[in-house]
Image (cartoon, rainbow, N blue to C red):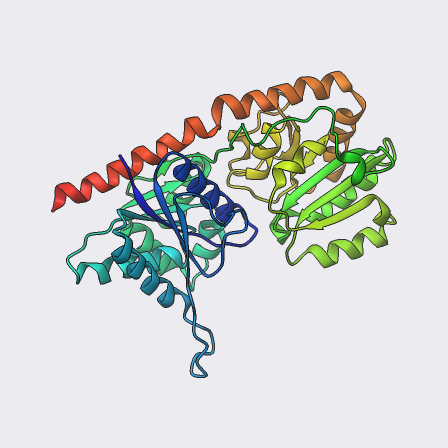
Length: 382
């Protein structure tokens, strides 16, 4: 089924926006027409990609509005794009406010005799943090229940949504994915010397630097690792904890062994340079950065929380420890950096997991099938 789909996501550096962007790119590669509708071009969306269009949402700053009503402007833009390009379905990522805007757009189009279903994909903090907040709980619950289709990125998140909201409708689990043709191992680490000229082992952390990511633990892990192995830490991304992390690196006396790279649009070029990925998060509904690392043959050392155990098999393709246990994380990293056979074995297993369970060829058809199913329900209801 050929689909004309409108995708809305947060275009900033975060898992939900990255998944949405990569999904759009993959759908376009498979012949579908994709329209991104957001306030900024998604960070990983290259302009000029065939069969992809970007539609900016402009929000007016009238003096009357203390906070610009983005959700209303988004709903108007969704309806406008849907009418102009005859969209078949809207797919919104992150419930608040995107699913509410999609619901309004659906109602607006009904006045024009158009029926436009929308699918909401839940990514994690839209349920566990934002949606669970008393101020947003009723509207989050309502928008999920009014969605024509709902997906979650892990079994954990599906269960959490049911628990938090008492959701009784179907939530389809479609897990995150990675393009294994783009994310590939580079055993020679040919360009690592440009970032670590002293030839140290390379650790990497990739996130949006929010408190839930526990970026300070990464620095303390590096401090412990360096007592055993010369190592350098690449911190990829940006967010509220970046400046405090830079200060902590100076306080710990390791600032010359840490490079803060900021936001990067092509992490597939950076990840293969690493020997180990650090993901010490307090909570992850899936762990997209870990999957991308695994596809590159980089073993992750993560936490046994949320949906991460659905991705990483402890001791096989990565290691899992408790959040905040810096000593345990450090010991796992040291073992990978000092035992070449262990790292080679785990690197191969990590790549195998990505290829056999989470590659685009396995996951994208699940979305295509779901679009067909949801659109078919609406056609049958006419």
